Structures are given as structure tokens and as C-alpha cells.
Amino acid sequence: MTSDSDTRQGPVVFISYAHESDALRASVKALADWLVQRGCRVLTDHAYIYRPPAPGWQTWMLGCIDQSDTVLVVCTPQLRACYEKTAVPDSRHGATYEGAIVTQQIYDAAMRNTKFQPILPDDGDEGDIPTFLKPWSNRHRFPGGNDGILRMIFDGKKDTGSAPPRLKGGAAAATAAWVSGADQERLASKLLGAPAALRFFESLQREFADEFALPSPPSAASMVQRFSASPEDQVDRLFLVVRRALLAVPPTDEPHVSRRAAEEAAAALYFVAACRLVDQAVRTASGGDYVLHVPRSERIVCAIISTALFGGEIRLVPSDEAELPASEYVFKVDVAACGDQIVEEFERAVFAVVMANDRDTPEVSKGSGPLHPDHAKRLAARLRSIRQVHRNSLSLVVHGLTQADACHGFATTYTVPVMLPASEATAALLGMDAGTLLAEIREFWSELEVLRRPVSPQHADTPSQSAKGEQSMPSSGLNLNISGGNASIAISTGDHSVSQTGSGNTAQVGHQEGSELAALLPLVQELLQAIAELSSPRARETLKTHAEVVAAGVARPEKSDPGRIKQALDAIKSGADMLDDGGRIIGLCNKAYQVLAPVLGLPPSPLP
Image (cartoon, rainbow, N blue to C red; front, side):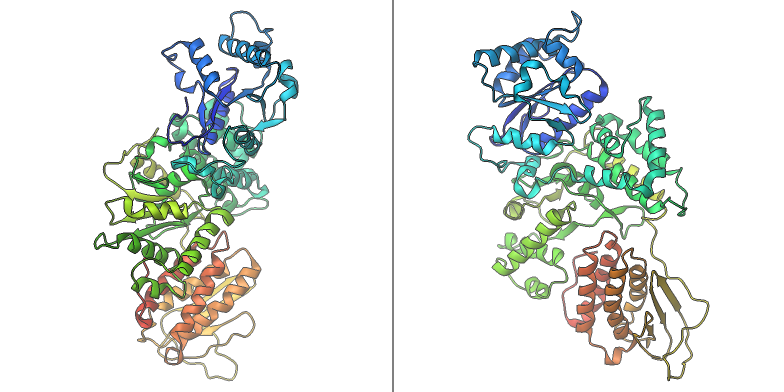
């Protein structure tokens, strides 16, 4: 039995299949897990690999069929032989007995059937459907057609509308907000199937075949499916397969080979495997549909738990902790657990974190009581955009609260996972404890060449040029020339303010040391570098325009408008938020806000 708890009137599904191969058993388990996460109670025999159920197989099978709303019959050659009694005698008794029950129940119902539904593996043959089930075939396949299977199950559930109901915990993924499917698997399939990642995929096939002594999956989608269906005790071996496969990819780009594409595919696949470690049992009841107690507060571990239970994509970005990556939309929320308005304070703290650059954030941070309805609507729209438009893994990691009740209402209203690090929470995710998982991620991160590479300034060999018509002033300290794509930004620092121009693709900026904005200079340098390295020419040009405003303010602090600098940073962050490779730019904008906050009289940002 895959799951028998944490649902509220969810449909009961029994999966009947023949044990033809380990691969088929694993793919059925993956389908069962997928359905559980979307609100179904799924019955399979995977829990009884080594010991039969206490009542005995016949009683257990009959009970599963009787209590199920839907029986999914996985049609394969062996199952058809068992159902039609053409199999070799004394083989596969389970499928033969299930076939007898199914046939008899359809016969007893005068050949009317809404319960027994044939489905096929993606590569299955329609000829494998037992003859007496063919009238009810709707050509459902898995995993490619999982969404259609889910719809069929819920459409057939008595007293349930046309959409999955609101459910608890991981089953909350069945609500309209989360019904998008297995986002991380889809991301991995897309990245692994990219032409630029072909070298990595071919190496991955070889390593997989060597490690497991099995035929290697022939396509990117089937490889991802194999990873997502692997038993939990094989996840550590999958980690090694991914890391060994990366060794075959050169550290620098070659014709038709992209190290970045390989690393992105490897990371997505690595975390498909990591999500296999997360079981429904990792949740300890703490008062709400989306409120969890978790064993670790590291953002990447929380992202894995959130993705496994609620969906979303994990896209790695560098973090302040160089040894570990981060997942961008895992927000840390610090709440002072005191006073009578802790619930309202929690909501305002979340607004300040998620909407860090909103024009009303200072007002919200200083206020008290419930959020204004307009602010609540804007926060809801932002959270919905992260989940449903960008399909990112999203969660709030809360520090300072000891009672889950304070965030229960928020989590339920906004349908956002809220995670409370707790020492009493189990340290084991399932096949691996959280500390070991973190060590594996740290090792993987250290072996990447591109994704973890910090943005470092490139020092120019020649002094920057002054604007036409101005006398060049002597400069000391840093002289930087940043280039990327069609954009070039040059910055120099010294004792004198030289010039600023936005002509062409070049902005030259001098900075007077000692001003309140001096701390912005290294951040501006990194920001311009990060913008210049963006893959999209249009994004580079758009964000460069706003960056020049920031650079001009740093260059002439005596004539600058800090408010305008903040507006430009807000525009840069908003634009970067729409880009897959904008994570570092967003982080630099957050750091720049920390410098500007005292100048503008704003509260410090809660973001790192």
C-alpha cells in the first residue's frame, strides 16, 4: 500500500499489473507515488516485496478491488496472458487471480463497467489489452499521459466534482494551483534532451548501464522516468552516476558541446533523484495543510522537500554560502514570537521578504495589524506567479516561531508550504538522513564548473577613456572593463569624479571615495558583469539601461538621487526575475538595497 493516510475523501485506486520486470515494477511505483501526491489513496503490492500481507494474497487482492473506486489495469503481454488464462500454469498467480475477479465483477454487472480501466506504458502495445477490457479502453498511457489518468480517476469518483478536492499535505498538489504535473521531471527531460547536452546524456547512458547492469534508457524522457522511479536505496548510486557522467564533458565549451547545458541537465536530474528520498512520513502534523516540520533549515534541503511534496522546479543559484547552492524561491522569514498580533506580524514579515522591492514594503514593515486587502492581493499574485507561471519550487522557512498555529492560516489561504525547522523532526528523509544528503549536494556543487562560478570582475589592461571633450583625470584603485555579448561597461574609481556617459554601448563612471554610497561600487561592478553575461541580448540591453542609472548615481554622489537608484535597482530585479539565469542579479540587487536602506531611512531587507 503506497499511502493510506493524509487524504480527505480522496479516490481509492488499486493498480493491477504483472511482475514482468524490475523496470515495470518501478514505473508502476512511480505512477502510484505521483497519484498519491495529487490526492489519491493508492493500493499496490510494493510494500509486500519480502513478506506477504497478513490476510494472505487472495484476501488482500479481493479487499483492494472491493474498496477501490478505480482499478487501473496495466496492460502488458504477461498480464493479458494471465487475465485470459493463456499463461504457463503455476506462473504469476497474483495477476491470474486478479483477472478472475475483474472478469467476474464485470460479468455480474451485466457488462457495465466504470471501475476497471485499462492503461498502457508509454511504449506499450494496444494489442496487450485483454479482450474483455477493450470496450473500455480510452488509450490512457503512463507516464506521458499521467494527467489524463488523473482526470479519469477524479471524473469517476462518486460525489466529487470535475476537479480534485482540497486535500492535506502532499495531496494538496491536487488543487487547481498545483495540478500542473511533475515539474522537476519535466524540467530534467527538457534540459537533458537539449542538443547542447548530448555529450552528457551519452555519457550518462554509459554510466547508468555500467552501474546497474541494465539496458540504458534510450531517450531523455525515459532516463528521467527511470530516475524518478528508482527505489530510495538506489538514490546514492544515481548521484554517483550523474557525477561520473559529467567527467566526460569538457570544462569549457566546444563545438556542439556546452558545459553549462550539461551542468543544468545534471543538476535537474540530480534533484529528481533527491526528491525520491522524501516520503509523506517526513511530515509531522503541525496544524495545517501546508505547514511542515522539517529536520534542516538549509534552503536547498527545504526546496527538495517542497518539490517532492508540492511540485515546482529546482533551479540552482549561487548562495552566500559558497559550499552550497540555493533554490531561488525558498524564503527565510524571521519572526519575533511575542505580542498579541503574532499572526499579523507573520503575514507582514512574509510580505517584506517576498515583496522586498515593492514601493509599499517600508510602510507594511512599520505597520501593525492585518495586511491591507490591496497588499494581500499583491502578495497572493506574486506567490501565484512564482508557482504557476515560472513553476518554481516555493516555500517559506520560518525562524522564531514555536507554534505552527501562527502560520497555519497564512499557509492555507495562500497555499504556500511553510516549513518550521524543529529538532524533534525526524532527521531521516527516507533512504538517507538529511545530513548525508546535504553532504552529497555539497560534493556535487563543488564539481560544477559554471553554475557555481562566482562572478569576478575582469580587470582591464588600460585606463578607461574619458568622455569626449573632457580632460582625463588621474585614477587610482580599480579600473574595470566588463564585456558580454554586444554590451560593454567600463568603470574606474579614484579620487576624482571624471565623467559619465551613456553613448553607444559604453558607460564610463568615476567615483568619489568617502561618500555614503561608496559601498555600492563593488556591487555595481558585479551587477554590470552579471548583466553583460546574460544569454538574452534583449535582456542585456534593457537591464544595462537601468544599471547605467545606478552607475551614474555612484559616480556623482553629490548630485545623485538615492530614490532613483532604488527605482533602477527595482527595475533590474523585476526584469531579472523573469529570466532563468537572473538569480545572481537578483541577489546583487538585494545586497545593494542593504546599502541604500540607511540612506533612504528604510528598514533593512530580511533577505540575505
